[in-house]
Length: 385
Length: 233
Ligand SMILES: Nc1ncnc2c1ncn2[C@@H]1O[C@H](COP(=O)(O)OP(=O)(O)O)[C@@H](O)[C@H]1O
Ligand SMILES: [Mg+2]
Image (cartoon, rainbow over the protein chains, first blue to last red):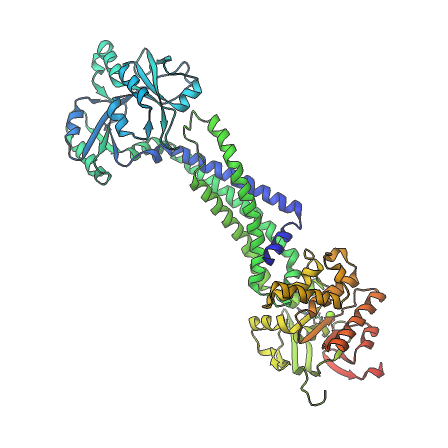
C-alpha cells in the first residue's frame, strides 16, 4: 500500500517528463496494435478456413479448369462427405476499383459446407428459386446501398459479357472472422450461358470444395483424391482450405514479414525511450535510495520502487494505447474494407500489446535497479551530503 | 553508569580507501567506548575521517580490521543483509542536509522507518505523531519538506531518526546547514533527547557551540583520536 503511494507520487515528480513518456508509449502501443491487426487481417481468410474442408484444383494452375465429371468420382472416395464446386467469376461492378470477391457455386451443398455463412431461410429459398439470384455479404450490401430484389450488372472478365443478377439473399458471418463482402451466384446460370456462347468452356469447374467426414483424415483424403486423377487429362492438386488460402498469401508474405519487423522496431524504440527516462529518474534519486537503505530498507524495496514506477508508466500508456486502438482500427476498417474485409482488433493483439508493455517496463527498470542496488550507501550519501 | 558495559565498544579499528593503486589510510587504530545516555561530539579538521568513523559505527560502511560492538552485537562481523536489519531497529541517522523524502509529508517521512517493523497502521500513526510532538512539529505534519524551513526539516529528520527507538543516534554535522537560531533549537532538542529520553548520541560537528552541548568531545586528527575533557575547550 505504502509503496504504491510512493510510486505514484514519484511518477508525478516530473509531470512533463512522465506525460511525454506515457504519450510515447501510447503511440507505440497504438502503432503496434494497428500493425498486428493489419497482419491478422491479412491472414483472416486462413484463420476462418476450416481444417475439415479440402479444395481441389487443377494441378497446373488455378486458371485451368477441371471437368464437372470429377464430382461423382470424388464423392465415391472414402472419407468424403460433401462435394461442391464453383468458378472464380472475377466480374467488375461498374468500375474496376469496386473490387469484391465474386464467384459461381453450386449453392446447396456449398452452404452446407460453410455453416459460418448464415442466410435467413426465406431469403435462401428465394435465392434457390431464382436462376439469376445472387447472395451478397452484409457489408457489401451496405457499401453499395443494395436492397433485396435489386438488379445489378457485373461485367465479366474471365467470362465475357454483361451479366445480370438479382440480389435475393444477404448473408452474415457466424463470427467476426467471416468475410462479409463476398458475392456468389448459381453455377448453373454461368454454365448455361457458356453452353450457348462458348460450348468448349461448359461443364468445367475452377475448384471443388470437399467436406471430409473427420478432420483427422483430411490429409489422407487429399492424397486419395489426387491419386484418383493421376495420369488423367487434368491432374488435381488437393489441399486443405487453410493451405489453399495460404498459397494466395504467400506471395505477399515478404510484406507481412516487413510489417512484423516494423512492429517489433516500434517496441524496441519505445523500450529505449522508457529506459532512458528510468535511468534519468533513478540517477536523480540515488541519494534518496541511499537514505532508504540507511534506514534499513533493502535492495528489493528499492527494486520495487523503480520497477513499480516503470511499470506504472508503461501500463498507463498501454491502457490508453489499447483504448485508442479500437476507434482508430474502426476508421481503418471502414477506409480499407475493400482490401481487408475483416479488420478486427483481436484478443491476441491486445495480449501482445500488454506483453510488449510489460517487457518494456521490466527492461527499462533493470539497469537503474542494478545500479541503485549495487551502489554503496556511504558513497552515495557523500555525493548528496 | 560505572559497572555497566559501554553501549558502543570500538577496538583497534582501521579503515583505508583505495584510489587506483594508491592506499589512503583514514582511520588508524581507533579504540573508543561510548556509554549509554552519552552525548558525544566528534570534532576535527575536514578530511580527518569523522564521517568515515560515524558511518562505520552506524553500520553503513565496512572497516578493514578491528571490531565495533553496539549493545553487545559485533556489527563488524555482520553480513550486508544482517546489517540492514540491524540498522532498521538500532540506528537513527541525522544528516547534514536533512535528506527527507520530498514527495512524502512530514508525517509520512517519520512513519517511514516504522514500515520495517511489525507495528500496525494505527500504532505507526501513534508513534509517528508522538515523535512529531517531541520535535514540536505536530501541527506541521501534513506539510511537505519543501514547505518547511531548514530547521523544521531537520526536526522532522530527528523525529524520523528517533521514531523506531534506536539504540544509538548518529548525526553528521546536523547544524552545518542551519542559521544560528535554528542550530540552537536543534542542539537543544538533541540535548533533550539525551537528558529527557536517555538517548545516546554520537555527533560529528565543526561547530564549537554544538560541541559545548556535548558531554564528551573526541578529536580526530589524521585518523587518530585525542580525548579532551570538556572544560579544556
Ligand atoms: N569513497 C572514498 N574514496 C576515497 N577516498 C575517500 C572516500 N571517502 C572519503 N575519502 C577520503 O577519506 C578522508 C576522510 O573523509 P571523511 O571521513 O569524509 O572526513 P571528514 O568527515 O572528517 O571530513 C578524506 O581524505 C576523504 O577524501
Ligand atoms: Mg564529514
